Each structure stands twice: as structure tokens, then as C-alpha cells.
Image 1 (cartoon, rainbow, N blue to C red):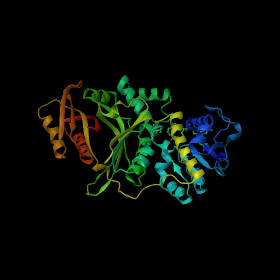
Image 2 (cartoon, helix red, strand yellow):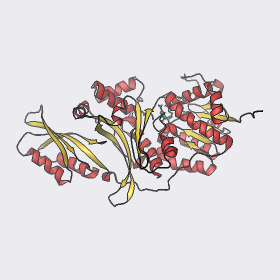
Image 3 (spheres, rainbow, N blue to C red):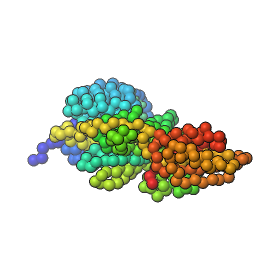
Image 4 (cartoon, helix red, strand yellow):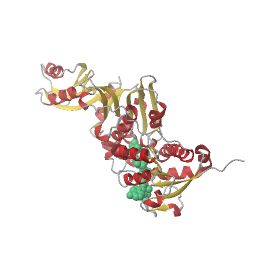
Length: 435
Ligand code: NDP
Ligand code: HSE
């Protein structure tokens, strides 16, 4: 005779884009989830702000509540899909302190307050799962935390924000300006009404810090990431990159490297960069995400897929629910935060990169020598120079691409060019990666 499966009750905090899809899939495939997790899963309560608001999916009105205690206390698992810092932080802590495992998709919360939450989970023996917090449906958290636990990761580089990738792709493929591409992203529902966290690179920075913590077994947060968003990228920047066989992407880059003092540390940055058109990340279009991970033994791996959206993100949330439910029913726990390496966060200036500098200069004798002198004076070697006609009388357009150099030296070059009498205007300075 088969023994009945244990029954677990799940509290869902939030029934918006992602929460509503989690509820739909969990309810429509309950028999499958019971087999996969080894426990019957039923929804005990759904916390929302407004129980009367229209929902994407039908939810039993008896489950909806505005009382956090009703959705947390006494539950076997809690799924946090409210977003933001508060009240999510307080509610997740409340669940973890009770020994209730939590599944969250909240990268902003983890990047700002991850350590206290991991500690609360460890102290009470609860699981804290967060696959959906980075790259939606793409199982990169599992990949780094479990599949690659046997390797030494040296670099993680990826496109981790779907909204900005959609905008840059629209600028590249349709020739749209930044404002028009953003408006298109908003019209299609990719960008929020307030798109600041996406376009200023903050969402990508939060994800970058989560990936770096996992890859390098070191505690880092969003404030450790050097961030530049996409708001200054122009259609002409995109067209120029294309003419030179490259595309511009917003990259999140986390590296294990040697700092100026000779010690190994972690360097993290988010910024737009030109990458070769044949680089694997160059063909990631629309709102898709992709992350390239370099391991000493595994070599280069690429994770690719839908980085946002209700159903894709619900897929990641539910994989965590299955794992947490199995632990709850049969024992065991998720991998704990691994921070044994304690690597220092390196000064952003010691990152190594290349710059592509586009400037308007005087069209006169000696200008090229002046400009080249500025690069040489800061130890930045020039890889390519091209000169073009400019619509401004007496000026020409000069494009200089450097070899690899220290970020701090390349920034100093750009500052010095700004004071160079031969240079009328620095039109753009964009990093070049992935060669
Ligand atoms: P939504 O804004 O669509 O939904 C938020 C839900 O939380 C709503 O149901 C809302 O209630 C509820 N809520 C908000 N504040 C409170 C509060 N103070 N008390 C009670 N309930 C509250 O968010 P998403 O579904 O888009 O995102 C959820 C999480 O998933 C976020 O952390 C996000 O970063 C993450 N994520 C989202 C992705 C996406 O594509 N959307 C992709 C990957 C991760 P009400 O409906 O009544 O307003
Ligand atoms: N705003 C995020 C993006 C949602 O555009 O990628 C997924 O985290």
C-alpha cells in the first residue's frame, strides 16, 4: 500500500506579474508538483495590497488577504513576490525566523540585505532560494551554486537586464533613438512606468553582485558594483559600433583578478560596451538574457533564455518551491551562503578594459600627434585610429580604440582629452569587451 504524501501549505506574498503565474501553474499542475517534490502542495493564503484589484488569473477570493501574518505564520513554505525592500525584508525575516523556507525573486532585497537573510535562514534551519532573482527562467543561480561547485570560476559576464537589452536592440536593429526605443519598451510592457532601475543599470548591478557572491564565494553587495546605465548611448554610437563590426550591450561583468597591490580580489562592473558582432552575447536580442561563465576546469559555459515575464520567472520560482518542499517533507536543506573565500572588492580603477573614444577635433596640422600624446602620456596604447569628415566647419571626427589598459588610466585619458585644445568635444567613450 502506498503511503499518502505529506501535505504542505504555501503562503504566496504578491499576486502580480510573477505571483499570479506561480499560482496558475501550481494549481493547474498540482499532481505533477506532488510527484516531483514528494509532497502535496496547496496554497494557504495570498498576500496582496488590494484584494479587489483585477488579476491576470483567477484566484479564490477566500485566499486573498492583506494581513501578512495570515500568509506567513503556520505556512510550510513562503514565496515572496512583492518586490522592493520593505515590507519584503520584514516579511521574509519573519518567515525565516519561524524556520519557514522562503523562495524569492527579489534581487533588490538580496543585493541590499542578503547576508542578514542568509544568516536568519541558517540560524533557523530554513532554506532561502532565489533562482528567479537573476535572469528569470535561466537557471544560472543553480548553475553557479550547485553545478559548478566543483570548479574555480574566474569570470562571469552577461546580459542580465531584459529591458535594456530590448532598448539597445531596438536602437541597433531599427535605428531608433534612445527615447523612442524606451517608449517602445514601455508600450510593449517590458519597461516599467518608472524605468530608472533598469536604464541606470541598478537592476543589473543587483544581479551582478548576486552572481559574484556565488561565483567567488565572497560576500558582496550592490554598492560594490561600479555602475553606468544606458541613458547616454545614442543611435550614432550604435551605428558606429556596427560600422566597426561590433554591437553595444549592457554588460554585467564580475571577475576574479589581481589588484594593484598584487592581492587577488573581485571586480564588478555594469556598463554599456561594444562587443564583436560574432561574440555569443552579441546575438542575444529582444528582452532575452545570457550569461557566460568561465571556469578553470569547465572552460566557457553560456546560460541563455527569457530573463523576465510572468510565466518564465514563475518557472524558476517553482523549481525552488519543489526543492524547498522536498526538504521540508523529507529533511535536508539548500546550500548555505558560501563566503569562505572572503576576497576583497577591488578598486574599480584597476579593472582592465579597452576604450573606444569618439571625438570632434580641430582639422589642423599636429592634432593627431596631440591626441596620441595624451593616450601615450597615460600609458594607454592605441590599437586603431580613424579620421572622418565632420559637419562642423574646421573640425573632423576622430575615433580612437585602445588596447587593454587600466580603467583608471583610460578615464584619465578621457579627462585629459577634455582639456586638450585640439579637442572640441568628446562625443562618446564606450568600453570594448569580449575580443
Ligand atoms: P508586481 O508589481 O507585478 O506584483 C507585486 C505584487 O505584490 C502585487 O500583487 C501587489 O499587490 C503585491 N504587493 C506589493 N506591495 C505589497 C504590500 N506592501 N503588501 C502586500 N502586497 C503587496 O511585481 P512582479 O510580479 O513583476 O515582481 C515580483 C518580484 O519578482 C520582484 O522582486 C521582481 O524583481 C521579481 N522578478 C520579476 C520579474 C518580472 O518579469 N516581472 C522577473 C524576475 C524577477 P496588488 O496586486 O494588490 O497591488
Ligand atoms: N526589469 C527586469 C529586466 C526584470 O528587465 O530584466 C527581470 O528581473
